[in-house]
Image (tube, rainbow, N blue to C red):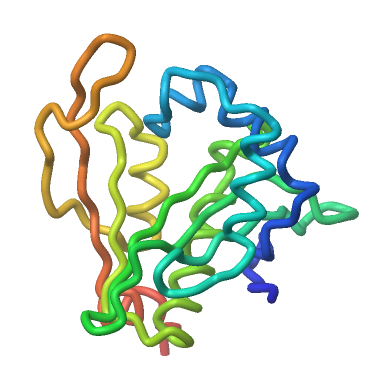
Length: 186
């Protein structure tokens, strides 16, 4: 399955993606930004995670590789998932990582998130998508806000990273708000 955005394509995660994924999460700055664990990820562990998640279902969620498509050939730049799907309440939670630093601050994350939301609201018939972000990651928060996510709350001292407690910002997006924000002007 491919989901096409303006500048990105979301595709199924493949075993060949493991080295890039492991390298990104092992970068200390990236691991800090996403609130990852203090320990290093192994390539074998990343390969096992990919194998375990190759089957998408409502319980385990759906995992995508993010490719930039505005170059000569698609380039793997990150990954995202839609998880904690609840069919009755029609909601899910998104997580995203743009791991290739050359693609930071250039709108690729917003395009990827917009693409995923469009698909989740239209094809999965979700009503709500939510996410959480570390208080000290304003770049991610801006990307989420560009798509229409709004801050709904703050979990005080929710994360313990590098010897300090940090707040987690909770953001949400309703289908009707996304549709209103993406309607073409007449």
